[in-house]
Each structure stands twice: as structure tokens, then as C-alpha cells.
Image (cartoon, rainbow, N blue to C red; front, top):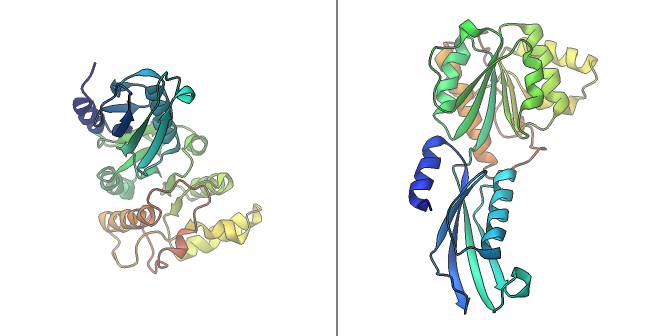
Length: 279
């Protein structure tokens, strides 16, 4: 049996989400000890809280929390008896603590100079990053930990593979590709954030083209372009990257712990950027 402390440390080092389950109260004639702990990941269980149907129910709750991306601590009270297959009465109170759940799943489309400055910043946050481009030579030889490189001839198809509630950042080398990605992201609609690199002029052009393709004003308003915090000025790749990373942080902090597919437009949370961005 693996020790829960070692398991928790290993999972956190690997960046794998898990739930720590603790018996915080035990009453009655049940053979369990308050303070007993187990760690539940998507595919494994480490240590035990005493086995039996209670442990099975705890595992089921923990895995549901992992599947939903919950970041909220949770208390559950179990009255032991026939409902849990026990022959004797009693009460157990269990504490469920999510560990290592990323605050954001981020997709960065484009491995150009701004992308190469941005991705290491995002990788240092409690986020999982998918870095997507069709040009293998644009990716660095070594990727930061927590970043998955996706080399695809058809990057549009990758939009369908994103988890619900993803943060989408579009900064490719091609305006037409940017437009096709914008259409796919807005059509899917279940993102938490969608940022498009470019100037106000680019936004106006894209708004017209997206409306011609059937998108209403409310849908297009969810597109953040120009993206980035107004307070962080400059046109160097790193300056733009810091600005965009700051906007991502502001957005996920505003919705900390929420898993929503109908998040408010980021424009309601942040000031409108007044500067152009380099491509």
C-alpha cells in the first residue's frame, strides 16, 4: 500500500490532479479512525480510509470532482447502516480536498515570436498549456514543463479537442488562419476566454467577416482583440506576452473555482486595450 504523503508529493510533481480524502469525524461502533487519509487520482488510489462501501463511495465522489474540475473543498456526512452496507450504525464525516487541479486549460495557436515569449510565462502558472502550430521548426528544442506541443497540418481541427472552458489564444502567422480559428472557437462557444492578437483595425475587419458568416454581435463581443492589459505597454514580444499573461491571470482569478461554459465576456472584466499588437 502506498503512503498517501509520498503519493501526494509524486502526483503534484507530475502535475496530476487528485483529491485528498480525510475522515475528520467518526462516531459509533465503526472500525475507522478519524484522521485516516487516502489520495484519489483519475486512475489510482493511494492508502486507505478503511475499505468497504464507504471507501468506494468516497472514491466515486472524488473522481466526480476530478471529472468536473471542481476546486472547492467539500464535506460529506455518511450515516452508516443499511444504506452503506454496514451491519452497525455510526456516522463518518469526510473531507474532500482537490489538489493540483489547474486553474486554466490554455490553447496557444501559433509558435511565432510572441508565442515563444508567452508560453514559458503561462507554463509557470497553475495552468496546462497546449501549444499548437503546423510548423515544426518554430517550436523550441525544449518545452517548459506542463506544455504539450501539438504539431498539426490542420490546426482548426484542434479546436474540437479542447476541454470545455478552455482559454484560447490565437496568434498565428496568417490572418486567414486567424479568421478560421476565430470562427471555429466562436462556433463552439464554450470557452472561458478567447484572445486574438492584432490591432483595432484587425478587429473591425474580423467583426465584419464574422457577422457575414452568421455570428451575432454578442458572440463577437466575446472575442478579445486587441488582447492584453492596457497598463502593460510596449511592442516587444516579451512586453506583449506579459500583457497577455496578465489578462489571463485576471480572468481566471475573476472566475476562480468556477467551471462555466457561459462565462461573461472578458470585456466586462477588463479595460479595452488601446494599443496595437505586433504580429
